[in-house]
Image (cartoon, rainbow, N blue to C red; front, side):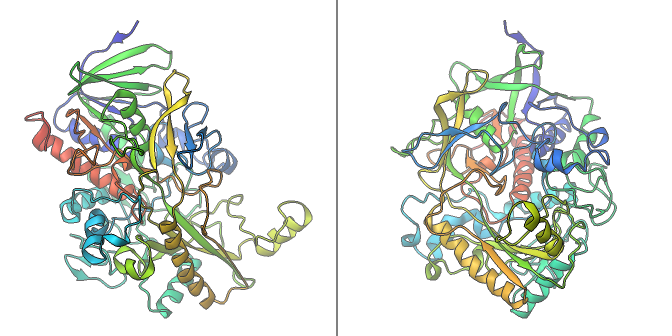
Length: 588
């Protein structure tokens, strides 16, 4: 029998970055807010206390903070003709588990997209013409401009306590910042982090070649800081245990450090852990949601009534819940009809490793988003027509991982075990650095998400199915970046240089880690025929359902998505507070 809980004004599914933001802002309205989190409770103390959290085998290799595929997974195929198989061992991407979500284990890179990225299709048409858009490419404008979002980027950066250096303040170019960024209304909340020797070497080489290096915008505090919610951050100690770990030092921007303790003190906020939401319940006419049904840790099924439903889980899970709940027509790539599941995209990355016999890089000293960046080959700096691709990348160097197991970079000719391996560690540990490309990924008609026809989860629901493969456009982009990075690397005179980039014919491989930057599937826009959500992240079909997260991206930007995700959450909840709550309806 399904129990019915006491009605709430708002139910939030997932309590990571976006769930925390929405919970805090709606509690300010005096609403009764309940958040449901499928994973365990997590807090800085005791969960991230030192030295327990600095266990590289547990967290860095065995993924203690990640969702276990046995509990939550999806199926993956590369083409429409393949049979999708379950993602049984974490590799390519690492969804977070528990309170804080992936905001616990991320590294902290916090960018704003370029203004051109938010109106990408229009930018391409205006400057290069429709002929350069590949057949099957489905890029779209976002339905929102950078100038509209700017105050919300500023808000998120202040709440998250981002350290960096502005390059464009109200149209004035600022020395040492990124001269190619869109205008900002002010400086970052904190100055940039100090830099490690590899980042400084890269900066010097980039300047010699006429490029414009600037410090990586960082969710790692460079000094003591108190954010607008009264939450305090301490300066990063460069311990090296950041990416894949919780921060014991209150230095890394995370929901725990920046929002949750303040939110938990709100008398009108409640959260429940180990609560698996099965579906969003809809009214008979399917035009409004009545609440959600979830399972407790004990296996009891509960219906939670609510006037407003916020999906704030990970991108893949938001899309899965929409498909399971019948919110929006499922996308069909053959007929090109439907919308929920459309435009899944990922991230295109590559790197060049440099080995120096006479330089000691002290790799045990690192911060998650330590580094120097150049944007000289970003989306608004490239002639797409001349180079034959749409997209761009930032290029970066710095020590973001000081962990001994995962920092053991060795020349590829090295045997992977035995005496030769030990000798290579003795010779090369601490004597290498990397220059990386972090690039965009376009959306395509046959890259999408739907419900798997064969595999089901432990509750009998169809698993989410991902269809995705690398495309020639994006491979041309990463090969272009390879030539630029290798030229910089050569100018630095390393003893050995080795590169790793996708090449022609490359197929998507789920085994090696790439990024946890899965986007799309429930995209935003201005037309219900081409987007699942309107420009306020409100479902076109069910007006009291709002969907937060990277699922809203029509294609992937060249940057890490968290800054955009945070700004969109603040933008959406501002519309809810100002326009929706006084008169619940479709806002467009």
